[in-house]
Amino acid sequence: MRDRTKLTARATFLKAAIVAGISLSVWLAGCGSPKPTQQPARRYSLNGRVVSVEKAKQQVVVDHGEITGFMMAMTMGYSVKNPSLLDSLSPEDQITADVVVNGDDVWLENIVVVKKADQAKAPAKEAHPASPEPKKQ
Image 1 (cartoon, rainbow, N blue to C red):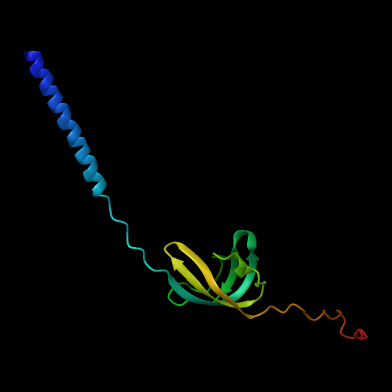
Image 2: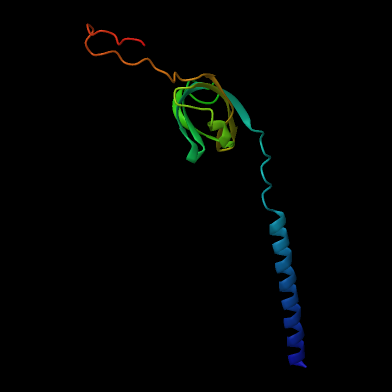
């Protein structure tokens, strides 16, 4: 009889331990911290000069003035989400763009070339100022 009582007590204890473990697991899963609400992306206006275009990195390096409310003037690389935005850019182009900030992610959108770089530069003059100019044909 004692063995049967011990067996019943063990079974009851085991069932109680299992129920307690499941309850604790459910309680802990329910107490997880809620995800922070997603803040909308912030946008800032950028005016600057293209230093280089790095298509492989989907990035443009821009020497820009102060971005009011966000960053002081500096030269830095910015990612672009749409690589086709880089196709029309050349070093020395003057651009405007929107800097989009979403958490730690920063990228450029709405890139507009306001002044193209001078592609056809005048040929350099000879070192000696007295040398004659080349004849035009």
